[in-house]
Amino acid sequence: MTDSGCSCGCAAAAAKAEAHTLRWLLAINAAMFVVEIVAGWLAQSTGLIADSLDMFADAAVYGLALYAVGHAGRQLRAARLSGGLQLLLALGVLGEVLRRWLTGSTPEPLPMMGIALLALAANLACMAMLAKHRDGGAHMQASWIFSTNDVLANLGVILAGALVAWTGSNLPDLVIGTLIGLLVLNGARRILNLRN
Image (cartoon, rainbow, N blue to C red; front, side, top):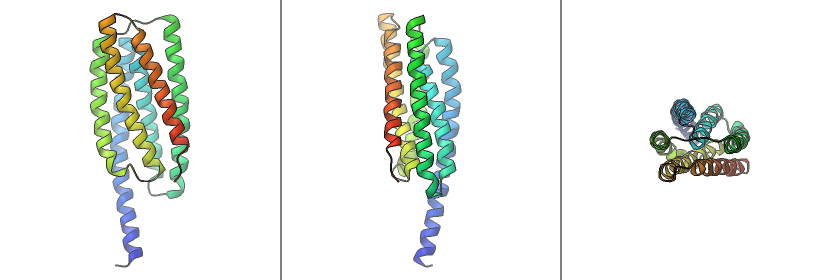
């Protein structure tokens, strides 16, 4: 087989592996979005709602990355669109924090921590699947950024739940919701600055 034949075959195999990984990431994040949005609403947790919206955006981003697999011209465009989506999400999360700060909320710490632990396990699984692709095209680099941000957000929600239980105040939940919004905003900035 010639070098060009090998490079075409290797590129096709890499694209197939990326697509397989992205399908799993899309399914995991879509399922966790549903779990977290319902639990966040019932537990009145800004942190869980913020994390659920991040899961939704991630699922959309993985769908965009799937669209870009094997098409170099689409990869940076998909990453940029993902960054724009993350920017909108961050603004939405910060708006929800402000709304709950003004109207009040009484978060339930045990559901917060339990669901955040489940989300943490899901995101660590996503990171493990993405690890071999994280230095790929812009679409895969963006996917890695999302997953690392998600793990940090999950740890933040767990900490907030513990602090809500300890203090009886909703302030830790609002602070973590704000920090998640800022983390997502920074992720959007990093993604928008990616180059192929």
